[in-house]
Structures are given as structure tokens and as C-alpha cells.
Image (cartoon, rainbow, N blue to C red; front, side, top):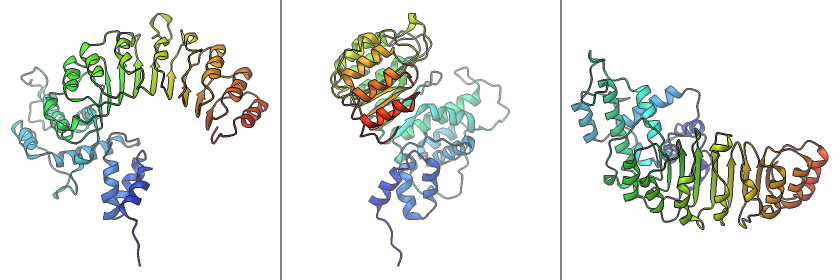
Length: 383
């Protein structure tokens, strides 16, 4: 007699595969039972695929989305002479967009531009009313209709870092955006985009912002201020930009933010964003410094973060003197520590000040130093 795992068991197993899209896709093909459970996890964030054959995967995603477009959207496409053949003569097994919890405007824009081929009809060089090539204008219509379809679902995350594409969408009509908990954006987006979001999104828990200049729109500041329980913040400074103009806005969340990730790609002192503001976030549990220079880390060395459990320096690192002092004040509760810094004195300070580590990434130059760390950090599970 054959036995089947109940849905709850299968769901828990498949959750471990949520980042392994290839394996998760294979689960769809086992039987109807596995398909019904795994399809929801696969399509939850369908945009985060990591495969060699990108074109095939993107074409498959686009075909599936086309087949799921509502009648109203299909009518809009037909009125604009956009005719799309479904992948098969059969109706889709599921309403796949219903499973989507992530809307990536970046990926939709990329997939449609790369994979959707509107019919030629000898109009290749004609212009639409907005002075853009008609073929590109038609692609914009397709992009808008797909975004509208997914925006009507109950979404958790919105990704929009595309500076070139401005979706023609009235966000007030899309109930799926009300419960957003994550936003990934940049400072070059139109202020109106942030204004519309600020009218309906008040429960963001995680915000990631890419800075391409020193200016921050008032609308973006207002969007941040309107949030009720912001917990995670990522600030990424590109091309000599800075997050300094946003810092006064963040003071509201000095007690609620528990995760902070800072990134910059410039090591010129003149352009480096300051770090002293980090001191105000007293309840931080995780800090990641992806920086090329630490011009004012000295001001953080004596700051105590009593709840800090994760500390990472994936790229460069501060001076050993400041790092050792920082670990002396904050190493006791650390569970994970990642640093590319070398030196016997620094590595020995880890064994002295971080006894409760479970995960450690360092580069000890001598085996005796590693032995000392293993002896003093007896809770280590990976190194």
C-alpha cells in the first residue's frame, strides 16, 4: 500500500528548497500532489532564479504570465494590435500570479524587452504618440499589464531599481501593495512613485535603498517616515553618492531597526558616507559593513550594542586597534562573525572576546592561533 506525505510535511520539506529553483521545479513533475504543494513555493518569488539557460527560463515565465492575463488585459493588448499565442491550447493548471509574493519590476522589464517579439507588420521605424518606436511602446503596454496583474495579488516584496522604466500604474487601485513588508528601490526613481506608495504602504519592515547621488526626495523621506515598524535597513552608495541626507529621517527608528547593512563602492575619503550615525541604533542584532574604507569607525569602537549577534566585514575592515576594541565591547553575544582581516593579535582577540560564536569566517596565518580559537570558542559549529 502506497503512503503519501501530508501537505504540511511536504510544504516544510519544499521550504528548504525555496532557493533551489531547479530542484523545486523538478518536484512539480513528480505527481499532482507534489505539484500542488511545490508550485506555490516556486512562484512565491519566481524572479530569483539562478540557472545557466536564462533565456529558456525567462521565456517560460513570460509565456505562463501571458496565459494568465485577465480578459481585460488581453482586450487592451488586442486593441493595440498585440496578439500573443498561448504556450498550449489548454488553460493553465493554476492561476500562477496568485502565488506571487514578490513583484520585481526590474525582472519583468528585462524579460519582456528580451523575450517578447511583437509582430513586425512593416512598422519597425514608426513612432507612437509618445515619440518612442512603436515596437518598444507595445512592449511597455505588455509590461504594464503584467505588473497590474501581479500587483493585485497579496504581495510581500516590491523590487524597483530600474531607472529607465516608469510604470504607468495608479497604485491606489492595487490592494496587493497594501501589505508590503519589503521594498527594494533607488533614489533616482520618480518622486511620484514614492508618494503613491506612501499613501498605501505603512507596514514596511525592510527597506533597501541604492543611492546614485547626494539628493533624497522629500517623497522618499515621507515614505520612510510613514512606516510603523521598520526593522531592517540597507543603504547602498554608488558613484560617489552618500546617504547623509536621509539620516535625520531615520532617527524615528533608532529603537526598532535590528538589521543594518551598509555598502559603498568608493574609497575616496571625500565621498565616504559617515558611520557615526550607527551609534543611535541601540537594538541592532545584525550589522554588515560592505565598505572600501572606514574613515570614522573610530567613533564606533566604544559603542555597545547589547543585542548584537551577527557582525560581518565582507570586503575591507577597520584598523585592528578599533576592531579589537569593538569586539571587546560587543563580542560576548556574537553568534556569527565574518572578517577577511589577518594578524595574530586580532585573531587572538576573537578567542578572548567572542566565546559564544557558532559561525566564524577568518584567515588565521598560524595553526596555533586556530587551536586557541577552537579551545576558547567551544560553541563553534562552522569555521
